[in-house]
Each structure stands twice: as C-alpha cells, then as structure tokens.
Length: 317
Image 1 (spheres, rainbow, N blue to C red):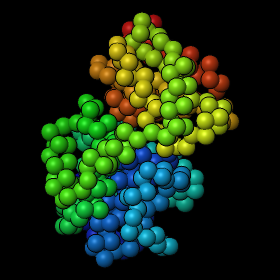
Image 2: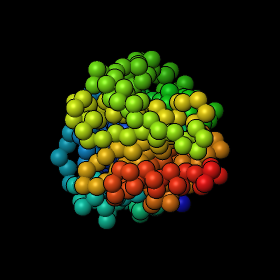
Image 3: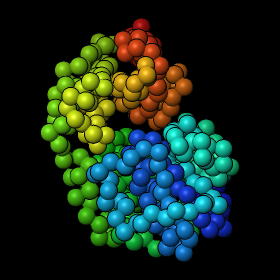
C-alpha cells in the first residue's frame, strides 16, 4: 500500500483534479469528496466533485458555495470507493482505466488506482481526508469541517457503531471546535423523516422474516413499494439498519430490487458475525459490520442463497 505522504505529494503536483464518489452516494463518499475539493481549491487548484448518481437533497448543504467547474482533469482521485465498478456509468467508462489515486477505508478495496491509500482502521474515509488535508497544510475551515463531520457521523451511525475508535472522537472534537452545527447535521441525517419514509418503514416492517433461531432478520424493498410510496433515495437511506436493531439479531439483511433481475444486498452485522466475509462469497465486500453485494436472480432465490451463507456463518445450517 502507498503512503499518505505519497498521496499528498501527488495531489500537490496536480493542477486540475476530479474527485469521484461511488454510486448511491452516502455521507462518507460525499463528505470526503467535498472536503478534499474545498481543500484543493484553497491551495489554488481547480477541483470538481463527480458522481454517476444524483446527490440526495439532504446532502445539498455540502455543496453550498462550491460552484461546479467544467474542467478536463489531469488527475483523478476516488474517495470511499472499494472497487472501480462502484463508479457506475458514466464515470466507469470515463475514468475506470485511469484513476490516479484511491483513498478508502474498506478492507475489501481492490487497489484499482495507480496510488492506493487504504486504512481499514479508519471509521470513515473522512478520517483519512482529515489527515491528508493536514499533511497538505490546508486550513480547517467550517465548510471543510462540516463535510468531514457529515461523513464520520453517517458512517458511524452517529457514533453508535463498533467501528468508532478514540481517534474518531478526537477528530470529531476538532471538527466541532471550528463552530459547525453538529447537532443540526445529526438531526437532518437521523431524526428527520418524510411521510414517504414512514410509509416505507411500515411496509419494510411488514416484510420482516426471521431465520437462524432469530439471529438473522431479512427485509425486502421492492420497486413496487418505492413506486407506491413515492420514496426518494433519501427516504430509503438507513432502512438497511432496521433489521439489526431487533433484539437478538446478529445479522440484518436487506434485499432491494434494482430491476432487470438484480437484487442489491445490504448486510449489517454485530459481533461475532462478519458481514464482509459473507458478502465476499458473492463477490461483494465492505466491513465486518456493514457490507454488500448484488445477485442477479429472482427475489426468492436471492434470499435463499444469502440465508444459506448466513446459516453457515452462524453455524445454524
């Protein structure tokens, strides 16, 4: 693996940088990208954030006073992306074969870039960006701190997940000391729900099935459910955490219908279960506590296949 110093040096040499986010962008990839973009612009470089999918409305504040720039990059950096296939289209066709740098915290990272700095101990990629910007002598402004805090709080479930370390709290404290409104970020991310979101939660709860003696719980999100409720991507964010909240459940599984026979699997786990190992069996990846994969088959078969792997992992086969 390459060093963070090498990553900093490479970015300092670059002049026009495209910072790439993964598809279905979450707080960590967007926070990392916006913070890095702002830091590079502070250093008088031209930088832009790019994502193949639309950015959810609730993340709009990250882009305030961050105007777009139509540039032809001489350097391409990917943040919080474990595999280039997660670029999605059109970014995959445009940059998949010429990514210069990858900054990530997923242990399943494939090392697809020319330079790769991967820190699986980081609770969020935003922790890595925090260190990187310091090495580049970027001043920690409120907009940068707000972006970094957003990534950290969303990837740790508001500091509730087992990926949180003492360093996570120390970085968060430095960010809050800039004067950002951390409680408001947490309210927007965790305590604000639309009517469509509440209706989706009701339908998801109705779909719950238990397995492995109650140690596993499965929910489904179908295209019909999304269409009938009018739910947006923002409304669907966080639904995959519901099964894990149930007492006694070690592994929560969310199957989301994507169309053309594809089901996206989001898995959340509590120790000693390891979601990343299970999803790796289906060419997926992530963290022990949160991982994912995709299956191209009908919903019933996808659920059967996933539960077989879960039973094996939990010793309940």
